[in-house]
Figure 1 (spheres, rainbow, N blue to C red):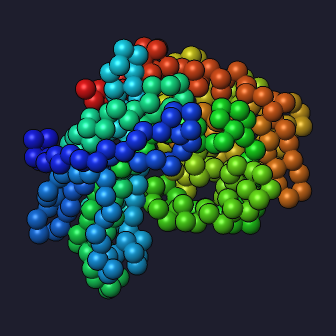
Figure 2: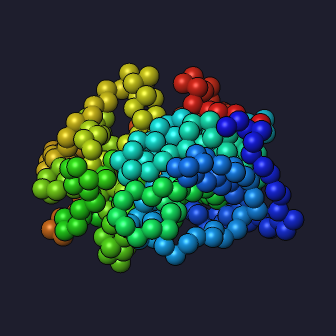
Length: 356
Ligand code: COI
């Protein structure tokens, strides 16, 4: 299916755009959306950019009963000089395709995924903020739409994309955040959905996050099924700096591997900073803090970008990391990554995909 097949229907009622200082995360939606349907009989059909509008779903749709729902998180940026580009869309298409296979869903082919998003971002490109730390967040979503109550993979799907101009994900902005170590609930178990961006993984996370927020922690750090090894934060992957080595949990099927995680590894390697993927015991982090080996902790994600962690706490203990200050590695990564995304630094890894 080529780009020329995408029909465009422009909104005649354009919204007022919010000030970039009041964006926060995910509060505002742009004027248009992209959608395309799939059925086993027809394949993918009717790709269209339409005014942003409610979806029509049969109450029997499989997503509403058996949770066939996957999404992605991507960003488009206004680059130095005014042109617009997306960051690593191939990564997100690959991840959606792998997730769709795990959930027995039909993922859109790569050209449809990328061309659909480009057509949408292009029509709403005035919504892309240009201020540092701001971007147009892209939310591609895939759901099962077939009305059928037997438990089996749906034979009909809807892929849709919505856009939201965003600033910082956390209310702390780029300042260090506080993270709660979750010892009761778990996010994922071996053999489960942890490595996919299934909506179900976020439903699972809400209770723990709500409890952590009551004690003023931004998010929780998930542990493995035996509560021994650290996994991820749910909205971001985690990195620790022990002396001069950067360490991040290896992807073993229970962790969602992020595009920012992957980009951070590449940047560190290009700077000859040792970066290792391996299993990390929670006990090692506490010992590293005690001995002084633990220099920094930070999270990475499309929404979170690079978020330094200033405090880690559990029921029985609490540690303050790097004096609750952003460490030099997190600061350098933030500057480099946002510099590439805004066109202020050379894109040596070809991560930016031009939209116009
Ligand atoms: C992202 O970083 O894109 C995420 O999906 C995290 C969260 C906002 C769900």
